[in-house]
Length: 261
Image (cartoon, rainbow, N blue to C red; front, side):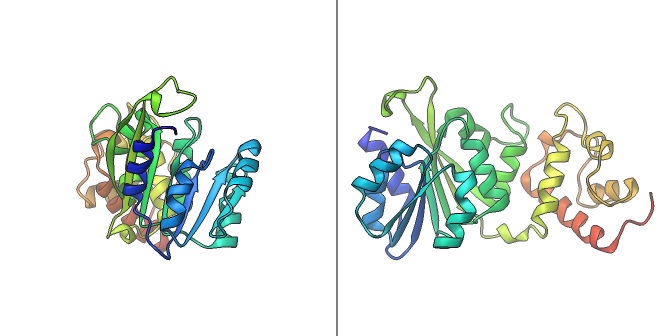
């Protein structure tokens, strides 16, 4: 990222504090790292390009910066074990894997207070999309269930070198105060995937076609009705909170055992 103003904006949004541990994903040449590290207690940077890793190792002499070489999705667990969970996560995410990285953080952690990312503009729009909109999807739901997501504006291709062929956007994700309301995250993610399995089918059809839950069809539909959801609608009409409520009820029933086939 060669636009210093854009870098400054991202650092201001990330708002690293003294003593905090920060993760930066996709450090590149270290332009963001050099702005983040003096403000934080400890900075762990992830970079998959071996040439860039060598550059970072030669340029970043600050003992408060640790460099993790390799793909973030492959090295996340290693970094957690070595350096502990961060307070905030930021970075200029690769277009090819940006959405997958965000999804992995949501499903597998670590859960942090704030995340700030540069992503392809279309990905940012999906993360922030409202129910019923063209870009609303299962990805929108999992983002909004745990975080307050906000589109912080676009970045022109000229902000980067080399300039990408697509538009970029900046997104902030602030951990919701009620993020812990999701009783069983594994069941929640299963429900969201099942609900959106076939976009043009109703919730009833998607859930009953190949239910991933150890519940009878009657119990599953009763759960949906109990939380005020019409099983005849498509999942794209439902907000994250409605699907969280349904997943919580499924979690309770799953622990008790299904009543009948």
